[in-house]
Length: 391
Image (tube, rainbow, N blue to C red; front, side):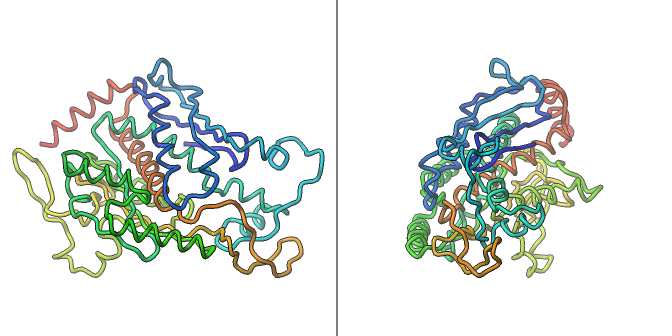
């Protein structure tokens, strides 16, 4: 996966390599995920400007992948208002640089690393706008996974100090993405302004976001991503960089604002004795291998074990505050209020959608590593043979 583009540049561009030939995909599949990323109570004015739609430039013909690199493009609709400040060619008139540094953003380390005198050279690429293309590329990976029965879901667990009550089955039931109970739950998540199915927690989350906005402040929180239908054996115990847990953690930590990732019971599991932590193994002729719980989060020894993959991510509050923190001016080195860029109050609901995309990309990569071929038909044979051998 490779992405390019600045927040207020002309477009976002992405290239995804390794998707086999014969996978059915349409722009509507990608646009659906892009629209989910733009929702959520607490989003800023940018979401009222952009209506993200993807253009598939290469790698797909007549609705099917060719096996060649897939190139995607998302236009930035706000570009006409930024051509003078963000144009590729030298400007006709001087452009006032951004010099007031924001605590918590890439501003200061970025200008120090690259020797810039204008913070905009850093903040444009460091912006979470880049995650729109990750979601687009992740949508392609989701199509591949769905072809083999893997579904990825997410929901908000907390915003600020408001925590939701999640049903126990969400991270333990292998069929937690289908059936009346699951369908009702995930419909409630998607219809919620904060992507939370707990109505009481939802009400309090919305109120907390409104209060933070009124105070010129921002809020972080946590969200959970669950992948259902993942076969055992993705990843490997052999080398550190092949462990599925490490790959997932690295991908999720690469998302803007993410400061922590837990798998399964996570940090809470560290206080339990082994007799209460580890998931008891069962076997039956009808169900095959199964577990009595899922505190491992579907991963043991760096490999998927057949249970749902369960991860939780912690997102810090957005660094841009409408009542800015004290800081320093890059040019004068004198004390100054931190800079203000158009921003959100809370991105946790949208961050969950980005988390889904990154999990899908990692799982698709591991899936193709295990069952890979040049075409979907070839993978069908490999995957079917593997499943037969698990019994």
